[in-house]
Length: 306
Ligand SMILES: NC(=O)c1ccc[n+]([C@@H]2O[C@H](COP(=O)([O-])OP(=O)(O)OC[C@H]3O[C@@H](n4cnc5c(N)ncnc54)[C@H](OP(=O)(O)O)[C@@H]3O)[C@@H](O)[C@H]2O)c1
Image (cartoon, rainbow, N blue to C red):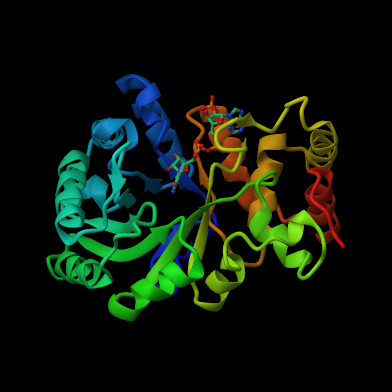
């Protein structure tokens, strides 16, 4: 698969990342088949979080990939920490360090390529995050760092103390959840799309060489469902199907190609556990939509231009 550099680092990664949040829905045999197919297709970037399946996603992954030092060399592994589900967010030094130890144990590895802070913690003491990152880096447990669901000021606050570059910011972004894009078109207009909900995070990430990793690239709302083939989005599906027919690919491929067409060089994190759809998503790396097609899809989803 086509590759790119993650943020300002030299870490070369495939342009499509595989999210493992839904891995626990597979049994061990299915998980093995899924992971092996991904690797055969060049999709070797696997994205986790300590909370997925309450840790089961990481454990199942390590089993499915038959983790060993020689296998580990072929993988790029990312995980996230900082959420205590239903209780709180926790960016304390102690929590970050303990979480990483748990992640490494479950993944059966001694290092992560990237660690992201999962969701902003308003009680964050950035000096503590900096201490945790220094220890994780010097011990070799984590090679690169990033954030998730953070706005520019939250990132700036961390950057004041953290010395490692923050190379990725994972954010919810899909054709139907594109406020970070539509707001940029509607600056200062008297319409709802002008509302700047995220402090211009798209431009901020481009300016600071932070790769945006769009999560849930097929979902509308907050996990309300998939927009593809959904009767709630007739115009969007008509347009996507028309473009898919032109390129002789599936609608799934076009939905990922739409994200990849943005010059911010995003790395979508896909969540399918279906092998055919996985291949369709990977195929998006081969397609470059025209400017006209990109805009037509954006508008067909109900987004507005002034
Ligand atoms: N940072 C964060 O806060 C955050 C939040 C949520 C997720 N994430 C990350 O993002 C990853 C992706 O999230 P997600 O799973 O919600 O994303 P997604 O790729 O938008 O959704 C995947 C789900 O949609 C289903 N689906 C149905 N039709 C599909 C089609 N035509 N194409 C693709 N999928 C289709 C899949 O089912 P099948 O398996 O049957 O294809 C699967 O259940 C997660 O694994 C996780 O790593 C991060």
